[in-house]
Image 1 (cartoon, rainbow, N blue to C red):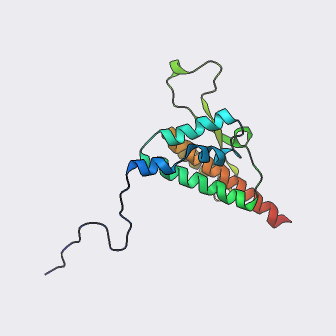
Image 2 (image 1 turned 60 degrees about the vertical axis):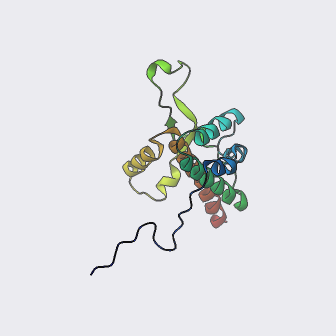
Image 3 (image 1 turned 30 degrees about the vertical axis):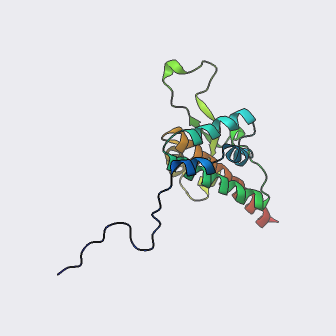
Length: 169
């Protein structure tokens, strides 16, 4: 007789379910704004990006994005990496606002105030078409995903630049 299938998660896996209030309690918007400061210099832009990351999508996505962005900023800070404002980077891709054409302002370029730097992608991809495809994938989807992805890549860019400069000395 074959063994009976197990129900539930495999032994030793994490399967706790926490109340949404616990996730909301730990995902502090001010801490996320502080983490975004090196890559989004303008305070109002930073508040907007943080609000989009923390205010949209499922709670587990908001919490995961918060944790990853804050952790990447912590690594950059501990390394002493210099800020690299991605919003001013020429070699970066805009994270597009997904608005209907009639909702756009004539003065607005239709982009979020955070750009995805392409240099870090070039450290892992050789072909420029692959870089462009990966950049498209990272900036596609709902704003909370696209902005968290762009923030992570921008912070990783800061970290890689700092480590590269240290190794060059």
